[in-house]
Image (cartoon, rainbow, N blue to C red; front, side, top):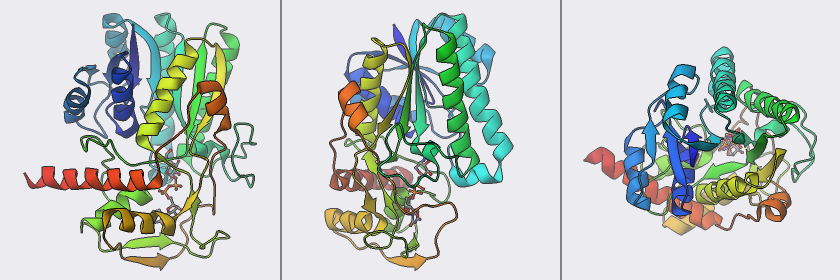
Length: 338
Ligand code: WQD
């Protein structure tokens, strides 16, 4: 029996593939490589010694997906495939709704046709929207999202809750990621943003290697300890291991359950910058800039439900995240120079 990872060649998907293979599970990856490349499959094999089956398809294409379900004995699906850039979603809402909702619905319909009833969804803390209650628990009232990307996650969660209510055999886990950062310690897998990075850590690593001249710190007048935004940064390898724990959970549970995947600790922008400088022995030039539209001051997870019910807690430190992110950036540079 195999676990299908849609979007499994992406940043979080590829790290999850590694952890599942290392845990002895069979992995199949379906990815259209619109935000990744085929070398990731080779790197997964290099790290684990096992090569996942790989299908280069768009999972919104039902006929293409049928070839996967017909050829492989799919026992469960972990659904990563989807567009994920917050800013881009504001510029292209129809593309985001079409792609993200179509992909999820097509996968669910294919699963139903093939008797596959286990689904883990790559969701996001963004579904909590502009709530004032921190830390976020899974019961925190979801008060509407601030961008179309977040709404697609919110809507797919609703689709899954309704599907699980209608089909008692369906087992669904919603994994609400906080801020995934870092890279595989081998230096072979990591985040590869196209164009100018939206997110903090990849921007910092590009400043560190000279691709960018300086970091713009979006606001230092927030009601936080040092005035800059506070987030719950979680190492991507910890996050990946949370998916292994979630798979083991759905082997024993039906219904639809949400879990926060965060560390439970918030760090400010400047804390991350100064940690990066200290760990990697360099200076990161930065300038204070105006606040970014849509940003909120502070949020971080209450991670207790995942610890109690999945038997999972994040264990890597901000130092690990900064060290591994920098090693990956250096590898990217070296690859581009060869
Ligand atoms: C973190 C902090 C910025 C860039 C987003 C998505 C979320 C999830 C994770 C997918 C904030 C500050 C950033 C920069 C800065 N993605 N910052 N200068 O916005 O918390 O979350 O990515 O699921 O859904 O919303 O992450 O890394 O963009 O920002 O000062 O150049 O860094 O203001 O305080 P964010 P981020």
